[in-house]
Length: 67
Image (cartoon, rainbow, N blue to C red):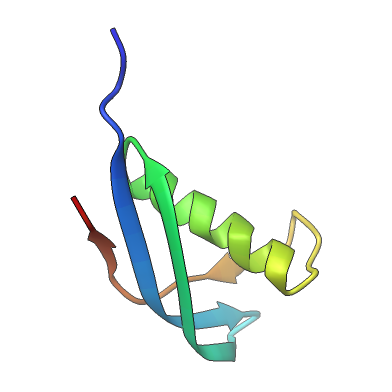
């Protein structure tokens, strides 16, 4: 009935238009899957860097499940 949520963390580079804009960014989120966690973390990066929501941001590093 309900999806199980896990805590995910990311510690790595942020790429924006094939240019590294942050070489060491940290973020955490709670999500039902790694795909959704990556989406949530991308949203956090966009908010912190004051980018518009449609901006293509890539997190090429590994996302780790904390629990």
